[in-house]
Length: 80
Image 1 (cartoon, rainbow, N blue to C red):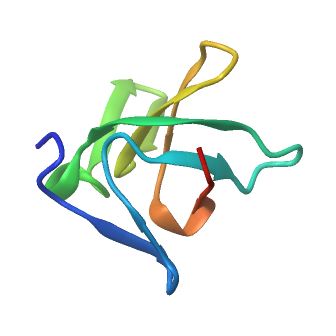
Image 2 (image 1 turned 180 degrees about the horizontal axis):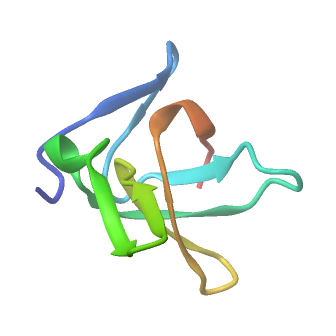
């Protein structure tokens, strides 16, 4: 679902694949949105019999090389 879907993070910024974003984590981290999981966001992902995770909308490649997953409410679009 690359690039076809957009989601509002707040009223002034639109998140899309290629957007430079900052997380609301403490401390905040910056990176680039690399994938949009669209309709798959919110689905439960079974990792093993003891661990179940909630899928997130956006995959972000952080500046430190880590890959993280977030929903729009925990991201802010930043200037390039």
